[in-house]
Amino acid sequence: MADILHRIGVKDASPEKVYDALTTVDGLAGWWTEDTRDNGGVLEFRFLPGGFDMEVVETRPAEHVSWRVVDGPPEWVGTTIDWDLRQDGDYTIVLFSHRGWEKEVEFMNHCSTKWGSYLLSLKSLVETGTGAPAPNDVQISDWH
Amino acid sequence: MADILHRIGVKDASPEKVYDALTTVDGLAGWWTEDTRDNGGVLEFRFLPGGFDMEVVETRPAEHVSWRVVDGPPEWVGTTIDWDLRQDGDYTIVLFSHRGWEKEVEFMNHCSTKWGSYLLSLKSLVETGTGAPAPNDVQISDWH
Image (cartoon, rainbow over all chains, first blue to last red; front, side):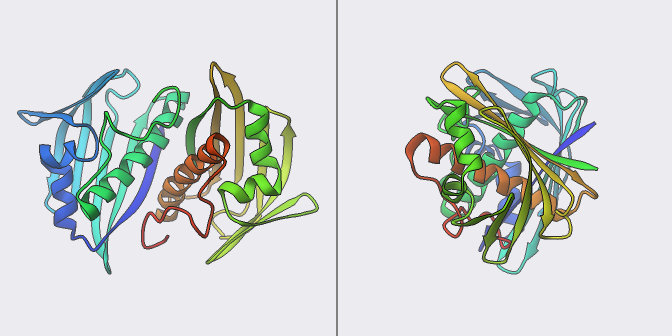
């Protein structure tokens, strides 16, 4: 089992505001992918090459969001994605983990860098009102 | 033991060119920190809050670079950083790993996101001639 970890701090933003960006379709579409839908508790995120369906497993307002991947690339299915939020001075600290990868494959390296880039998109969305969601996300390689 | 993994693709660049950015003081100063020195096989990287000393353990031109952290934050000392390069079509693929963290501490989350950001700085340096090394690096949180 292998994990991807990240941490950002969103300046001059409350945990409630970051939580909104993680739990509303408008918020999610503002930093991850414009093609985001809520299908009765399953969030459907679509990108040019495919997408991910996330079951929302747990939410605690302004504190915690937990997803389980129910459809998508085989390496992702069954993995879990957790978001922990807390206020720290002027910042809302976001601790991110994408756990339960069965094997440490090259695709995991890619997803780690890509998640880091999307977290900076989330930070930008909440701080400035503008993120960089797909299809206008930062291209990091031949795998997009 | 826990690991940080990343992957980028540097477009229209040979592995040799990326290798240069990982093995010369000018190259390293162009994407990681402007305050970089080579002290007889130990690379000294300095940032505002401190720095890292890396023993260059292994280099294979255009293929592989391996460092061991010999001084720096206690969580880093003894960990290893590996860079693997290969050509894939128009891209040089960079596989990065920072392995051997004793515990999964919050600082590791921070370093993972920060490494991702520095790898995009490396990509930019090689592709455009301009990176974003410290002290002009991307600020991701209260921890810089």
